[in-house]
Length: 574
Image (tube, rainbow, N blue to C red; front, side, top):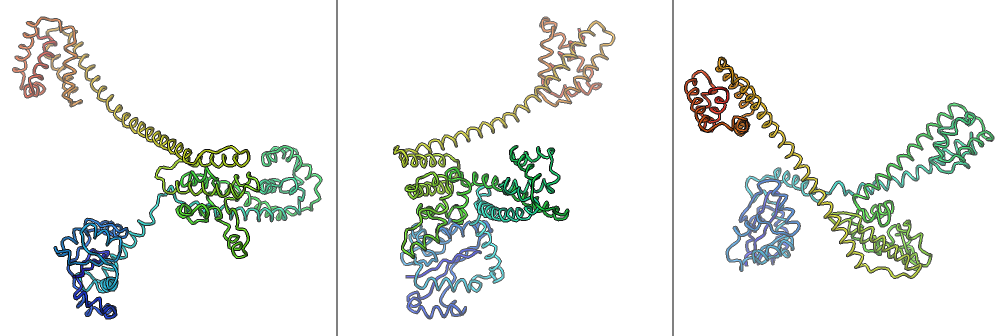
């Protein structure tokens, strides 16, 4: 049995034969010692063939396939070329068992990845530059570094619209802003209460309090004229009037202008932070609609974002079982309960959902378990579905509502199979409708482009027909004047020549011929027309040297000659 070892490197594939396989396998410690020395290792291993990659893209494609245990066409052709034809006496050593199974299925070669093979591969990796001519250590490091970066970029590649790390940062920032805004609001209440202590009892909202403090400044300046602005801030006329009355009877001390300026600046900063927090909440809602629409519809944007943040990513959340999702965020309470052998917690972050609050005390654990089950389903749909919609989340929410009603009234809820079947049908119909709309829009855009081109051609033909008709009408008026026949003929030739040169379309000659044919001269006798054509041909033959237009007509087709004869005949060669 002869042992061959295939080695995958960033620069290409290599196939090596191991000499005296049985002896090498018996003396594994000696092989491990020989790996560190290139001369001894070359006595054990010999290079059979090496195939370099032609480009970085090919190297990345092959390494991706090898890492997933797939046999590429390049590797298959390389092994078929370099391995002996009698494969029954051959054993191939590989580094990955999945790749070995694929090679065994495709080529029918015995494969191994244990025993002495790992040490042989380690030695090949260490002394590869000694086996392959022209492959230096510097070039090896460069190719390994480039392929490593490409491989890593491919593994972490994601859709920018479904980036759950933005959700993690957004919800973390919202939680931090909530704490900071509460702390700053307490500070501004303490600070401004030296001057106007009654305001904190009238206005309880932190954002409204900071806006009022920024607007009022010195309470002595408040008057009836300030009521509209106070009503705009508090959105309550009674509260605005109460602020005005409290300012007139306030027990606060007087305060200097510099102190008021600092309080005003601080109140403005707190107000701007509160406004930014609202904008960030809207941004989080949009991101959740992009990334996890079903989870957002089921449990809410904030709670869903907290679940994703605590799990680390949407993929991790989708991998969790429903029992883990149920207590996610209550790990300390869980381990404390296990340590003290008390009751474990019934819910974690999902406690902030409205369903838990609406349930009775005896049913909170049941509804939390049911809600965690539906959250797990929604997260898996959002994570692994290619076409996202909120249809499944809406149906899952209806199921939770039905379960709440079942605990309260005893109404039997629908089965999960029926609900999912209806949701799948609705989802497919919605996706088909989107595809239809997109296809109609594309057809409308393409059709509009075609329609914009067609009228231009029709307009050109129409202009040519009008010019030719005008020429025919003018020639009919000049039929009676025989003295200026030659001048009028040249004039009409020049006009028609300009029309034909400007358009450069052979089809427009036929349009002008049709216009001429539709004139009142159509009813003349055939004999008279033949005479006119004969006269026209005589004139053409006689004036070839004088008129370049007629010379051009002579070199053209028979249709052009007939056309010129008709025009000249109508001009007045009767």
